[in-house]
Image (cartoon, rainbow, N blue to C red):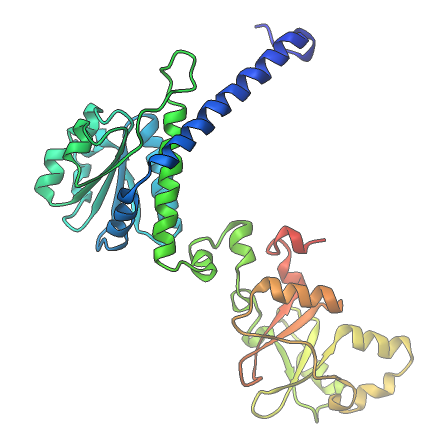
Length: 340
């Protein structure tokens, strides 16, 4: 089989290819501009219908519109709306059982005449679900059947044959995004909400809270000011998750200071071994840097970077010790911008 290589592409072919690709983008961009100007009150009404939906939002469509519908359902779900995609072919063979009277069904069809989608309409009426359409014309079969229709207007496809869905699917996706994000704004969807639905990936990690990754319980090495350094290290010996810091607290667990393995190493380096038998309260770092429960992990990482420290105690509002952020636990968790 012949393969296209740089040598087999003439300059004229490359220039023509770039020109063609740019023309596709021009057509699609202009289509979006026209759809933007056509948008009216229907999209706000659609957002309100979704916002007030007591059940689920079911998104359906056939072919490329169905794939766009899957993306719309995913965007709705990730921004606070309970939403699921439904293939119209599977729906008429039993999956309509997923739909309830308090659901909203969003049907995507550029022509508004997609047979598989239209076959759902009588069943949706019997089930009592509300039907919303995103299509070219309110006068199409789907537009007339819907309780609410967002009309995109006529769209010129970027395909030279005028057949392959291109500009029309771009418009469907963009309007779906606008609808989902409008609903999200109505919900006052916050970064904290976003983190709840996106625990994985860099976005989720960026919004992780310190309590989600901090060490707690027996993973902490805790001591009181009157104990000697030697007594503490002997008492805390044995199998446990290694931590590079001893956290010094009072009887009410208020954080007083910190003594790290680096502090211990400096005692030996400076031949001050005698201080191992002094009370740790005399040689600890008083009033160490700390972070409060509820803080973003990114804020904790910034403190670690700024002060070049490896351990950061976590306290509550009353300065009571609740945990520890250890830099060794952050490998793979820290957003890229904090790894420099």
